[in-house]
Length: 311
Length: 227
Image 1 (cartoon, rainbow over the protein chains, first blue to last red):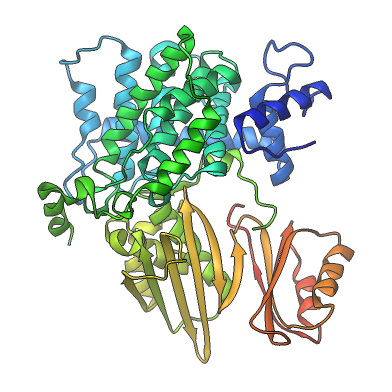
Image 2 (tube, chains in turn orange, red):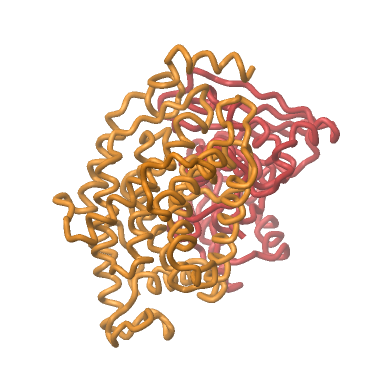
């Protein structure tokens, strides 16, 4: 079995080859998938199993455990106002959850914004989270997926295979970005962190809604395109401003991307080429905008005033 | 790098204490591995932060993370938050120093850890490359490339014909699959450091067998941090 891939194109070819040779695992076929049709999540699990030596059941159980950790962070951020040492994080998710002034009616959308912010506020305050792909962007994927579950499909949960598959396909997008670009704000700016997480959330939500890999990667491309060039300019060098609120904004980006992809409004530039552009843009970004706290928002008058507050 | 492949649980992880995967979790992992490489009672430690780490370490708790790693605390452990107090209680003397002008070749998130015990000293340089993933790039002046994902052996040896083959043979004879092997020497015939990454936990008897080889002066066993 060839487990190597660096592009989405190659990844889908590998999965296709695997289907022709009978699938990567006996139980590797998605619910309702026809014979000769291998599912992307099953193939990715079989690959992780090959490299780690762990069984697919053990991997599924670890994924379920990590999904539960994301829920614990989320619940904490929604229930208790998160107040940071710097004073920049002030329980925004609690305020948002209690707001009666939403211009948007849809509960899924409102929860996605609230949850993404809640999880990242817990991170800003030194709570326990799962880096997904990084700590500064950890609210986006679980925020969107848990919002769908709470608003639309209460039967889903950490042990549900389709819910797990959404996290797995989101991870695949992260693997692809890490392979050809970077997931580090210091190396590629915030497009590599919140931007990547937005693309991952778009692919994860597509999968949760029953879309196949092609449509999921297309949604990822749409979301990633709209985060290219995003500066990493954290105020006082802290993972708070603009990071925490940006988690909610990128959740909205991901939902927009999935809305487009499902409607059939496709990305003109394919996912793999968007990742290439992301790499080139990251390389061209000045160091001041790559997590050095020496440019952008960090250098505004208000931003600079926070240095004194944390000393 | 060895047979390292990024998997689902690398992207969907690690479970960690906030706020920054590269400045908090990655730094704790670098320091944790440094301590595994230099397992002697510590007289003192010096942590040098370069690049983005030098500028933002305070707000990200990178100092706490480094001290936590030196105390054997991994990124998912809530004790990381009060590692400075724990170190004070244990009498561990750690100096944290930001270095604003690092060499060009250093990764933008680099930490150098220097450890002292009696007349022994170690200098380990690690890069935090994103999402909590790390690479140890230099050990005591020897080039290395270790990410902590697999069990590894660091073999300090004289640069002689056949040493790499003998070490490989011992591991193979005991059915250990070598994921990667790389040896870097300071000069021809001088000392060299061989880094061997293996699949599975190598028992101490086999480590001792390698240590007993005439051209080998030291073997350090570095466990995986992904367990």
